[in-house]
Each structure stands twice: as C-alpha cells, then as structure tokens.
Length: 136
Image 1 (cartoon, rainbow, N blue to C red):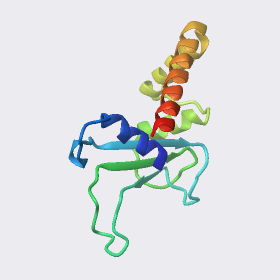
Image 2: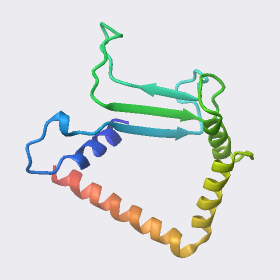
Image 3: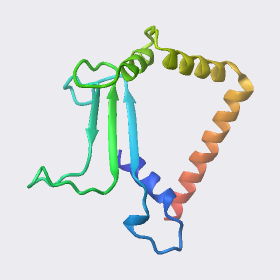
C-alpha cells in the first residue's frame, strides 16, 4: 500500500517546485481482494495514520487506505458495495449499477481494439512509472 500511496503523492507534486504537504490533495488507496488479508471477516478494512501512544490522536495527513474483502461477512457497508463484492466473486446480483459496470467491463474485454487500447495505456503508464522511479 505504501508504494501506491507514494506514487499517488508524487504525481501531485511537480519536480523542481517547492511544495508543502498542504499542496497534496486527500489520497485514497483502495484494494479489492478475493481473500481476507487480515482474517477478521470484515467487508472493509479502513486505515488512517494514528499515534500508537494516543490512538485517538490522528495525524490528519489526508492519507486513506481501504481494503475490501469479497469474503467479508461483518461490518457496515452499503448494499451496493456488497453487490459489487459478490460480482467480483462471479456471483449474480440484481443491483442495476453493478450489472451495468460488469456489462461495460465485459464489453471492453470482448472488444479487441478497446482492450488492446487499455492495455497499451496501462503499459505506457507502467513504463513511465518505472522511468520515474529509476530517475529518483
């Protein structure tokens, strides 16, 4: 998660310009996992930076991390999120938004030109990130 947070932050701060933390927008790193990484049965695990000695003291650095678990059975999440997590597992849902999303994703996969376009964009972004990491 730390890597993705750093990549997100570095994209917001142009090189050669003196920046402060105030220049950073709030940042969210979201993982959707098909297994429960933490073994506690939650739909969602939300993380923020807090003080170990004073757990009620939050750093308020605008950094948020969430891990969604398709195997979750505990915790409060919307019915839309539950339907989405079910769909990730390949289960059917009657949720209109989720079904539209799935249909759109399947259309992209089925359309060779569109699929290769997304793959090319992803490849370019990955190469750019690797170059930037090598130059730092």
